[in-house]
Image (cartoon, rainbow, N blue to C red):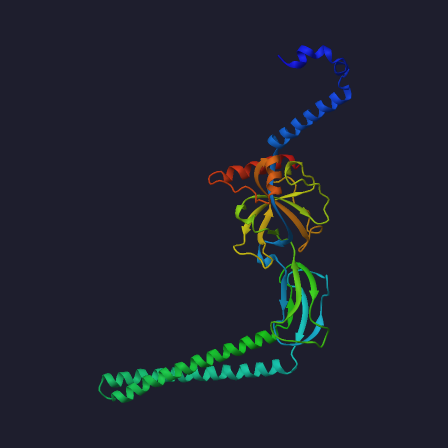
Length: 355
């Protein structure tokens, strides 16, 4: 039997001490909150994410920023656009003229000459064919020597070669004449002239030189995200992504995407096989068409706009996630056969709460 229970009446002062009600309340409250925190850490789910910065681009290379090149060498005579001009397909952008104003006339004269040479070669070939057939008949009748017959055949082959050369020369002059005739560079499609790179009138440009940059209209935008190397191995094509565009108000808690406000949905469509010079890996994200809220209009989120994305991964407890972050461990690597199910679970949960 405890000593205090037998002899407690002898300690009258100790018996008179009572724990204050406030202290008991504080003690019970601490126990309650500790238990509550333990339950929170153990049972509240947390969606792991792999995040990174990025920018807006396009999936189709034809929809990305394009360079407009000079088709011929020459001097800029007139600009039809300036920085920021809106153009439609076929609209003129710039007129380029050759330094030699008589070049086109000389090319036309040269073409007439080579066409005449071709016509003469074709006529000579027709006559040689007639001679060859006549010599063949005489040879079959024994009225002509084999040598004469062979010479007629050789003559035909020589003239055929001359005809082919003359035809190639005509094609060459036609191509050169066509290039020099197309001296107005036109817009390849609807879009905006982002920047005029060449100088003013009288500036000399060479064939293939970039004279302007062009941004097409009505393109399918995508997002380039740059992810840390330790996370790239657990990201798969088709993984859901939450996106924050620069300048767009947002409330985002990475572990609870269903409670995010102002973010937009996407899907991973491509993952680079090698790292960028800064050690990060690039992934391409397209818009999730199944999401109720589409991406902002191109007027508000333009090409090159900055963004940040969170690729949604496995679902774990809050306590485990804190422990992982404190130890700087990577997110959970999906077990083979469970990667699809574990990764799809968070994406479906966020899908209902984000709207």
